[in-house]
Length: 77
Image (cartoon, rainbow, N blue to C red; front, side, top):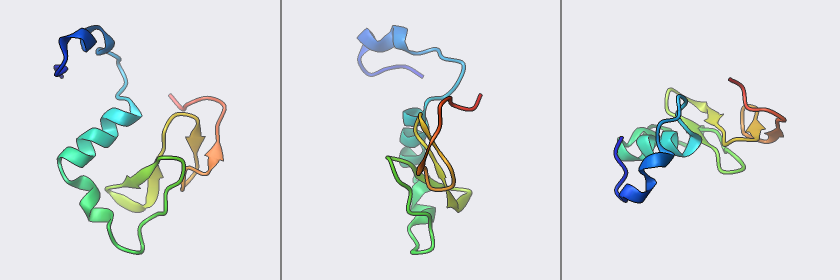
């Protein structure tokens, strides 16, 4: 990945993909369009429906559970 603004070049390179990178990739490729039905998960705390299983959510750091409604002390590795 190459940043649009080269000042952010040193911020790249984590071994793990971040929540926001997952979100941007899913938005870019239209993956979230699969979960527009009423039956998809009502994700909380900024989470978004998992494109392969719309009843589950992909949660931001600090949240977990099926709907991102549970606080977690540590992110799972």
